[in-house]
Length: 362
Image (cartoon, rainbow, N blue to C red; front, side, top):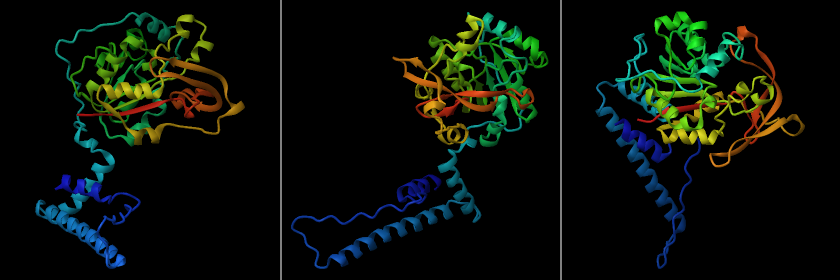
């Protein structure tokens, strides 16, 4: 009943803000109408009868497939949800459990060649203590997406996991740098809330988390890892993947250490990221992206400084990133990390942080 009514709603355009345009009767050679106006009225009358007949039939099916009269109202609400909300609640797990995620059979911990760089970056001043890029927008995500179990992929010092647990979520994190876990969140490490590991080899079973989040992490992976990382993030998600991915290479201008200056090893345009997530079974959540991504079309001309072309010509093409004067808070409010300028992709006027939101297909 719900499916047939949904199909009917789309067919009859019941949820459109504009009524479908009436089709003018076509003229056929050899046939003439005695009264053109009467023919038009007859055509419109027939169309109206078909529409009324469909609606009566839909109501009939709905009533007689429901156990109670009140179910009719409930089903109408379900139809609205199906059309507008993609029924995310059908895919997410228990909203009350605090059980740890199940482990993937045969999992063996691995590291990679650049762990030592990030051990040094986190523990020797490359990143300020208790930095948390995702903490600035994480609570906004909790109000816009329904979820309870969560993985923070590339959790750093675990600050986002700690914040989400304070919000009542069953949150976990995985991080390349064992050193930062031991230094800044050893309490959560000992409880199993965070653990060392790499994004190409996640230790969890398929569909373990309602949402996988990641905050300014994927720009740090190496190009040859991209497919496997995206595949793993989608594999362990039940429904949502929400990320911020930096599209800028401007760290090169300010970092004192050359190793740290070239940490953004995976710079690709938005369309390239959308395509690789789609390749591995996730589609863009356009509503969430519209709600979260900031744009500013007033930034043009002499307001743009230090513009650079980033990306790779044969992998999504090049794109221009410029600096604009725009104050913004980075990380937790308590850090008071107020920056005077920020980067913007010039073609679409999107301001950092650049958000990416996906739904996993089943």
